[in-house]
Structures are given as C-alpha cells and as structure tokens.
Length: 180
Image 1 (tube, rainbow, N blue to C red):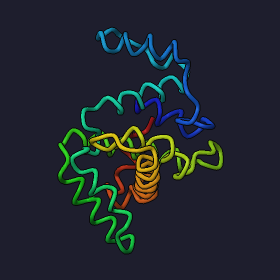
Image 2: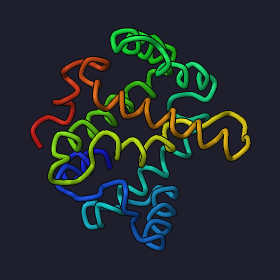
Image 3: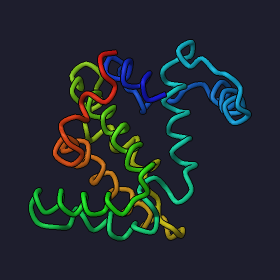
C-alpha cells in the first residue's frame, strides 16, 4: 500500500482527501482480512489511500500510542522548533519498534506528496487534516468541543512532523522506497 501511495500519491490531486468507493473498500478490506491475495495496483489510488487510513485507525491504541496522547498534544506548545523536534524524538523512542518503522515509511510518503503539493494540492497542512485522525486519538471519548480542539492540535503536530520529517527521522527517509 505504502509503495503505491509513494509512487502515485505525489501526482494525484487530493490524495487522502478524496475517498475511494465505499463498496470497493469494504470488499477489499474483507479480502485482505481473510488473507486473500489482492492486487491494489489494479484499484483506484483513492481506494488504496482509504484502505490505508482504515488500517491505521484499526491499530490498537493508535500508531502514536494513546498512552502518550497528552505528551503528543503538548509538543506543539513547546518553545522553538529544535525543542519540539527533540521532544518528538524522545516520544518516538518510547514507541514499539514496529510503530517507529511504519511511521518512518508513512512520513516518507507524506514528504514525497508534500514535495509536489503544487501539482497535487496536498501541502503539509492539507495532508495533516486528512491523516492526523488516523494516527492518534484520545484514549477516552469526550465532548465535541474538546475533541475538536484535540483534532486541531494533532493536525498541527502531524503538519510539523511532515514539514520536519527529515530532521526527525533522518535524511534517509527520502529514499526508503529506493528507486521506484
């Protein structure tokens, strides 16, 4: 999925914003969940993007870990960018290794899409609005006002992560997929 998103996402206007066919997504999700072979290259890239966001939303406790939710939310309240980056790196060190590996690939994809935002209309802000709710959610539900404020803070965090991913994860994030 990520490889396809890395290949096609940068040249696709509105990637992650437009939804794939709900019927197709449901059918493919059932096939994937059953372990059947699925050739996503034959599907719309919007279906792949929708399936990927669904996959992220189904990670127990979220990829960024709901247990660290308060710490993630407070990162953007810290001083300068260097302090934010150091705080983010410390939080990343607290995540399971599998989560960190997946995050590096996710932000490698987002970085590639952002680099061509003139073409695809998906700058770091737009990407964050679309993907942030799939990366972290509060451990307990709350009022709509609090959830709205939370969504804004997490979107701001994901925008910052996207804009600074090379400094956070290392320059090699731009070549994780090799020459595709």
